[in-house]
Length: 196
Image (cartoon, rainbow, N blue to C red; front, side, top):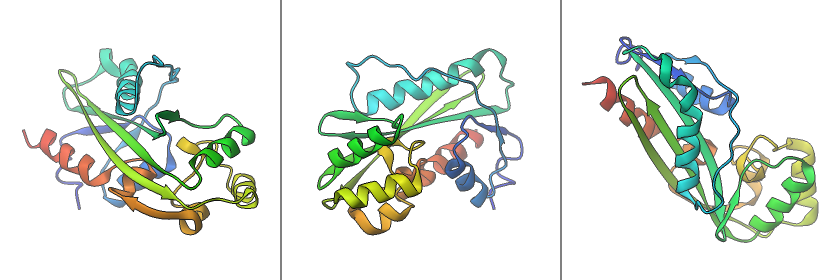
């Protein structure tokens, strides 16, 4: 549906996330994928949305010197923020279990920042959703981590997986944001950029 709207632009998704790729495919948005290895290190003084905003700019930096006027690079970063604490991607199963124990029985925020980088401008949007987990048992956490291997997901879980069906009591805000890309907001912003 949106192929004609963006046909004058080359949209580059700087992410290997299968979920982000699928969202763009489902909307019929033509895009290519190009990524660079980036050390996602940030100042520990940063909090919440400051972290994801910083990381999307960091991911866009390698593209800055070599962009054509019709290219738009889209970088995204999703974090989990709960109890004044940052939850990124766990490095191993033990860390994943620890994260889920900390999120169990509480509400937390899922924040996604999206950076749109063009030859002469760069803009960031962000979206925050709230997720409430029921109290998780040790066996539920063990099962989820072993069967679904959530090491590539912020906060050690994917809402679209088993844990989302069985353990999430309530969400407030954008569902696609929790998955990894707030699509309504991204589409709206792409339309704004390409209508000029």
